[in-house]
Length: 464
Image 1 (cartoon, rainbow, N blue to C red):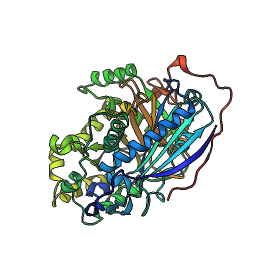
Image 2 (cartoon, rainbow, N blue to C red):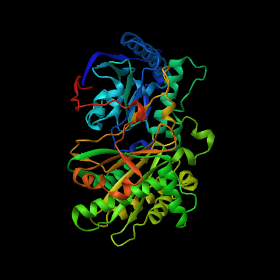
Image 3 (tube, helix red, strand yellow):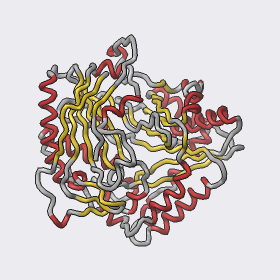
Image 4 (cartoon, rainbow, N blue to C red):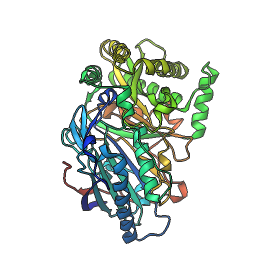
C-alpha cells in the first residue's frame, strides 16, 4: 500500500491572536509528561458513496473549520517556545492531504499496527517536539474507496487525552455547523498549578527516567469484549472485590500476564511496579474542570514484590488502592503556590518504590469514556481509532493504553513491550481466554479476504 502526500499547508487561525496573548504559559503539571505528542487516528468509512474528488472537497471544508477553531484554541496554532511556554505566533497547524492506494476496508480487515503511524503527519519523536516545533499537525488520508483516516499529532506539552477531546469536539462542531460552541478554559490549569521553574520536570525525569527500556519495542492489541469483562468482574467479585470496574480488571489481568512473561523470559520473578495516570478533572469542582485544557494528570503506582501472590483479585485491589490515593484531598493540596508539598510527597513515594533494585515497570493510561467514538466531522462517527504505537522503537516505555471498543462496553489494550516478552505475552493462555489478539475492528461480515500482506511506503518531508 502506497501513501503519497499530495499537498501540504499551514492552517492559521481565522482571526489573529491579540498581542497580549502571544505567550502562553504552561502549568506545573504540563512538565510531568515525558511523551512528546498525543497521536490519534480516526477511520471513517465512505457510507455516502462519495468520490475521491468529493472526499478531497471534504478535506477543504476541514481546513476551513480548523482555521475557525484555532481562533479559540490559539496556543494550538503556535510553536514550542521552551519548557515553560508556547509561542502563540499563529504559524498555524501543519496540514497534509495524502492519497492511500488501497481500500479502507482492506486495510482494516488485517490492520498492521507497525504501519498505522504512516497515516500520521509524522512519527512522534522528541526531536519534532523541541523548541520551534509546531504544536499541532494533521494528516488527512483518502483511501481508494473514498474512506478517510484523519491523523493528528498534538504536543503533549499542552494537551492530554481529555483536552484533546475538547479540541476535537470544538472542531467537529464547527465542521458540522453545530450551534454548540466549545469555549476552552485555557488559563484554569496554570492558575491552579502555577509554574515558575522546571523542578517538577527534573523530579519526574529522575523517577521516570529509569522506566525507559532499551531493546526493540513491539505493539500489539488485546481486545476484551463485554462478555469477557463481565466474567473478569464476576471472578474478582467472588473473591472479595466490590464493584470492580472495567479498567481495574483489565489492568490487573494485563499486569499479571506481563509479570508472568517477565518471569519466563529472565528465569525468575522480578519486583514489579504498575503505574496509572489519574485525571484530576474528576477531583476538581465542576466549575473549574469544565473544558479545562492542559495536562491535568498525576501518576500513581502499586508494587508487587517478587514473593507476593499474583491472584487477579489481589492485583485488582492493588490497582484500586493506588488510584484511590489521588483523591479530592490530594487535588486540593496540590493546588496553589504550596501545592508542591503534596506533589513532592507523592513523587517521593513513587521514587522509593522504583529504587528498590531491578524492577519491571508497566505504565497504564486510560482513554476510556473519553468520547472519542463520537468525533463526527459530518461524515458519521469513526469505525475505529488508533493511538500510541511504539513498534520498532529502540528506547521505549512499557506502555499500555486502554481505549473503548466501538460498542463502548469492551476495551482495547494497546500494549507496547519488549519484543522477547511480547512473544511470551501473546501466547499466554489465561490472557487469551479473555482477549482477542489483534482482531479486525470491522464486523465479521465486512472483513475482506487478503491473500498477501501489503507493504506501505510514504513520501513526506520531516516537520519543522
